[in-house]
Image (cartoon, rainbow over all chains, first blue to last red):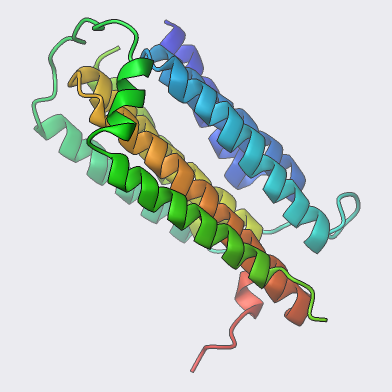
Length: 159
Length: 99
């Protein structure tokens, strides 16, 4: 039951992101969609990922996007309105991708019940991050530093 | 809810994000669509991790979330840099590389 409520909220807010003409409203709907995704993580017994989702996505990404809109558009007034083009073509391609994925899904046997939860997974994630995936974690740290330095370089003032 | 429900939900969100990427004119609007698509992939990863009882999917989700944040930071910095030069972020008018 709760899955259907969350799924409806997620799909509705996702549709609002791509359909609303006001760019700033689109970002707010994106925040709603990201929180709904976090609740889906909760339904999948992953409270740690729910926290990460709220902090990084709903907190960090939405804040950065709002700042970018403030720098490139006026928050109130006409300019923030955005238009869409090729709506019919886009809808056809998106529907085709969905039908393709759904058609693949009903062909593969994925049934099976949800296995019982082996206890709190957060310590297991922590041990996996510094155990088998320690090198990947370090690479990710380097990637983040390089990406953020690159972002600083791109967005710097000329003088 | 079975694994099918979560995978179908993720496919639907992915298709909606793809629609946004294809139809938006504003570069920031296109980035929002990409966010939706990456988000749908995360739902898939967590659903498979839960139903296969394998913690690797959760670790991968952490990695993809971090990479997405880096991608958004670089993408928006490029948008701001383009806006400084061209005074527009309409994707249709950024055709400097068109032959």
